[in-house]
Length: 498
Image (tube, rainbow, N blue to C red):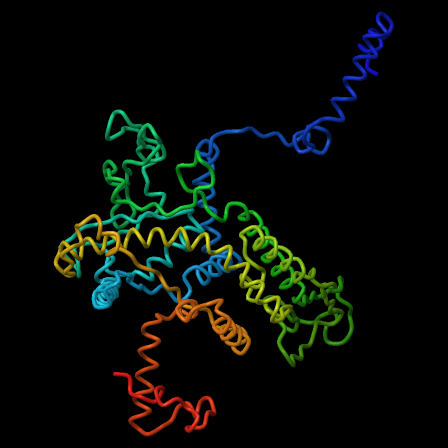
């Protein structure tokens, strides 16, 4: 009971009793320990702000530090590499779905041609697949990247892409293009907080800023970043939650390396006797030229060296070993991987503690993490593809008479992305599972081909071509591959498929 409660108790015991009852009820019914300011949390004081207010003053510092670790940390690059492998992997193949096979083939050939670096990149230095890999890389480090649609007279169709880094947004520019809008973080927004334009800084080849930024309509910009809060309008590095831990590991490994190098050194000191004893040729009267000077002398294997009389050698060999860094770095890598949503094995490439089941489960979990990133990237690819089709139709590279019919346009833009498959851990188990799924109707042949990164039509065409070629040579593939006697084979299966 406090001092005030003691006074109240003397003057009004009933009131003092009620105060004590309410106090105990409040202590029992408090909502969250995490919101309390008792001793464990007394120094944990935070405030609630909008996402932009929270991010604005840290964004550039986090960006600079992430880029520094990108240049100097192997742990950082292991995380980035894991996401590139799982999101992009061997790349994506287009499967047009216009329901017109000839047109599908024509579109796929045109898309493949456009994806070459001379046709899709305004700088002519990167293919479309390479641009996607850079986008994933920059999103992990910078938090995002911008694709700007450029319409030029060069290339296969009059449409190319320009990639812009997020710090090229003029976040200090406040004058809106339309006075009814507002500019925040270099992006102009309408009253609904929808982007209507982007202000892009202009630089020369040496990186020097030029004049005022240019305004680009939002319809021509694809901003690839992850939005985590409704009030968020700009990017934040994906590595922000784990960036301090990455730096700690980096600094620890540097310190450990220096310590190991010091412990590996063998130091030798010459202890001279003063005054020099008068023994032998080093006695009184010996000339200075007979004395040995040790300046600049170094140890070498098999060395035999005579010392001055009275001098003796003392060896300094640092004892002890550096701390075991393996367990520490493994723990930190596991925490970094967990913070980024990927397994330790995916980022460290260390499979020494894995078996088939754990490796398979790790791949599944990693793929679930990357599926959301892949979904976001697919939206970017979809918009780019639709712009390509429109440009190809307008330029006459694709002839689609009914394309501008609103009822037909959606069908002509319909498509699917097929991701190149990962190599199997155990091909026998994986193929057996696919066969069982086919036989039980859980999957179709089309689904199995898609999961393996193949177009089902191409797969069937290849199979038919092989069968026809084998029949022309008089070879029975059923007997060779499946051990089925020729007499038991249905004659219809041997008939040449016209």
